[in-house]
Image (cartoon, rainbow, N blue to C red; front, side, top):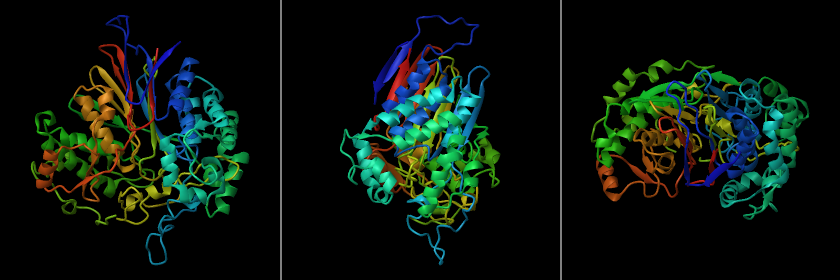
Length: 560
């Protein structure tokens, strides 16, 4: 077997020379993988070429990203894996989201006066929820893969032992978290060089992480959640002020959840269910926008209407959404077309609605480093997976002897109603901290499907994930190829703070002037954001295309 690969902005089209009989269900003419790091994509290619399916490759890519992209994901984090099994059309979402420790409580980040203690939910082991990635690796292998877990983990173990070279993005993100990293001797020893950000080209080797991955390869999830690794995790976190216990680890379980499905025009959207806010927010936005012919509008009006849809979806996110195992979320109501029609009726066609005029929580004014990959195999199985440790390098803490960089996902809870988290998102009691609860997330792995095309996509980007997926899906709806989805200019509104932010050069001056006259407060960002990974299977033309976001360092590959 052989494969062809394209870095960064490249998109590849494969056209099958074979004619598919009309009575047969067509299969893709090639497999494809797009991930945020070339070495992770290559790990997935290795497993596909060894006879693995998309789910085996997802294990390999997940584990490899834990090694080579530690700023965005890892064994100490969690994620959502959206799966489609082609043989029977079965679709599910693996919820590997982190859980609050059993000793966690609602006010754990407040001082005696009830005020937020700065950075307590961001830096150090007290910020860390119980990881879900190791459990997801075993679940994928046992329930959906065809290869042994040890075989799928082998590429990541080799990467951890042999090392990877520092690039400019890694260096920039280390400098961003340098002070916090220096407070953890184990983290500094792995990710820094002489207590500074390493030079570009410096090789990062992670022998402790290789040993932890090997323990999972040998013993499954138990290799992480019990035994010597668990002992070191607990001792390391508690010695530094954390609250993890063995019960926290042994009680962690993967959950399978029915994805959220909605429609826009003739497109079926399948996306993440709570504790992700992505599927419901996308349903709301798409069903609001169903009322408009966006392609017939001038750019400023189009942006205005999309922004107003964003504003209303994020208001509902703040008010209603949380872990459905703990709170009642009106999923059916929030994702119903009639509800969206009611919201659409409140939108003025030429005037912004101040967020303060929408009912909801009080206005308290106030990342970019999750990761995503997309996979399609030759049988048509597909995976869209968004993984995170939250802030760049998570809690910036490694329990000694484990190599596991812990998340700071506790910041994704609402530590106090109406007070924004590190991404500026506000929340209400539905997302308050509780023992064993999973924090609300914006991660939105997504499938799009119309009569002849299937898309697999997602992106990191903190609170901006959902709006990036929305904008990419609108490019899909306009029959654009994956390169256009990942390259499209981005803008974002999240209800609070009440401003419309946009990438450099996303709007021309005429659009800016018109939006301002409509009452929008615009905020230009200094740099681009997101790192989308996308695959398209065009079943009518029998071709596969893939693209990796030019804003990142990823690799999109077609495997023939």
